Length: 223
Image 1 (tube, rainbow, N blue to C red):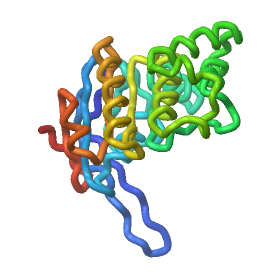
Image 2 (image 1 turned 45 degrees about the horizontal axis):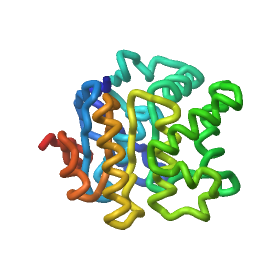
Image 3 (image 1 turned 135 degrees about the vertical axis):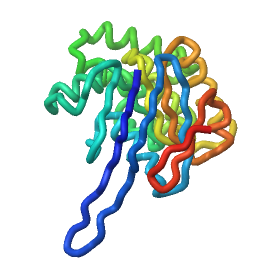
Image 4 (image 1 turned 45 degrees about the vertical axis):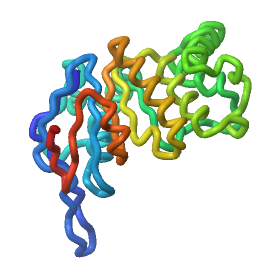
C-alpha cells in the first residue's frame, strides 16, 4: 500500500546557513491493513516523513509508491486527486472551520468531490454517528471538547472513505481519556481494513500499534 525506497530529504540552507538533512535513505513498506506507529523526538524527521508519504512534500532522492502509483511522477493536479482518493489526514490541531457545525465540517471535503448536498449530509451524519457524535453534529467546534473536535476530524476522514489514514500527533492536545478514545476509533478503523500510519511522541500511544518504528536523526529503525 505504501512503499518508500531509499528516501532522503535535504533542506538547502540560504545566505550561508548550512543545509539540513531531515531524512537519510529510508526504506519502509506498509502493507494494506497495517497499523504502524512512528515515534521520535522533536526534529527527528517524523513529520517530514509524514509529509512525504502524504504527498505534501517531495524527497530529494529515492522513490515512493502509494497503492501502486508513483506520486512523484504526477502533476500537481493529479497528485491532489491522489491525496483526495487515497489519503485521509488527521492533525494535532484538528483543522476545523470554527464558523461551521460539526456536520458542515465533515461535509466540506464531500462537497469538493461534487456530491449532491443530500448525499453529503447522509454520509457526514453517518460518520459522526460512528464516532459517537450523533447528538453533537449541529454544534460548532467552540462548543465541543478537544476530544470531540478530534472525533469530528476523524469523522471527516471516515466520510471520505479513504483506504489510508495518516495521523500526525492526533492525541497530542488531548487528556489521557480522550486520547484513549481516539486510539479506540483508529484501531476499529484498522480492524475494518484501513491502513494507518501514526506519528506520535508518546511511547504509550505507540505501544498500542501492532507495528512500531523509531525516528532518530532522520533515520528509521523498526522495533
